[in-house]
Image (cartoon, rainbow, N blue to C red; front, side, top):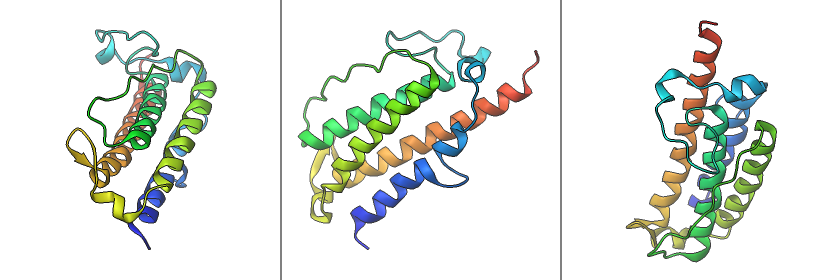
Length: 159
């Protein structure tokens, strides 16, 4: 198996693994749950074009924003100045998930275009393509874990 195919499998499983994936952790999130903000985030600055910080909607919007940004980096590498990527805007969770799925498809297409020989090439921020792709996968996993914690805190909150 090529290294690119291996990375694509990891990328795909971030979304679709039966138990440990963004899809599984986002399943059945209610609108109220998606907007809930733990008190730990109440002092965070609201960024225009993104939902309230610390909410599930924020994490999904952030991942969509990053997926578009990462795809553009792969398209234009090597990158010395990161391309401006506008935030996705505020929307309800189903719309944000739909946007994330589209952004991930575009990012996946850019990864598929790579060959194993490209992995050692410069990409961005002093990272090779390989290091950048590992960061992409790791970043999604990081946020999926945060969404899992938000869901648990939401279920255990004092109402």
